[in-house]
Image (tube, rainbow, N blue to C red; front, top):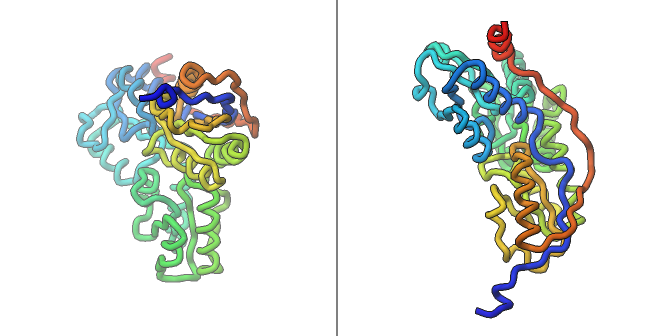
Length: 326
């Protein structure tokens, strides 16, 4: 093996998306688990990963949270937290039947989509839900009106979807989708259903939109982009796809150790962003790794917009906190 083969690539500059990492919904979800562990006692059960990030989930489990995929695994009368992705009414009924003490950490923006689905279904509309049929958020939304909802994941499915009354069709979207892909699907639906009912406000959340726009700003300035996130995180995967759609090679990583030196051959300027479910501690880990392994000397931030959104804790948790403090 030659010295040239062994030599590590040299990267001159690391460009960070200044708008990156946790969104308000994720911050709230983590806060819910940590506060519940403080005031409700241990263990506290979480239905599905509270957010799609192994590092965060493992940290909460060390503190006393137990992640379950089926409510049958939760002992009766225990504390249960529904994850940020939301669940169907059937799951709420199942929890009630088992006398579980529920704290709902569903992101308020996901709850908004659920409420819109209920309204459209009551008004007699067929709802076309733009999303990934196997994603936990989509499954939860479908549960609000299963007889009225059709899931569409791409323009081909949009062209083929059948509805009983083309005059009464509305659409909703999974909150973590690609803006560009969604726009194409909506355009296809509008051609097929001229009276298509549009939700009062975009369902794709502000954080998803802002992070995708930040990637679009970053890609012309870098040779390659690293997206810090999880492979089962929709918003993480979309960020990689947005970069690649702009012609910039991108890789999704969960930790700094996932970076392969061969990716960085002939890379002078390396980009880095983090999905809405990736903690800043892992961003700093990647920065330090790139400095040590690839000789990065210059680290700069690419600025776009700032976020100031905050969500309050769920009512049921706030009540427990008040009772404990009394």
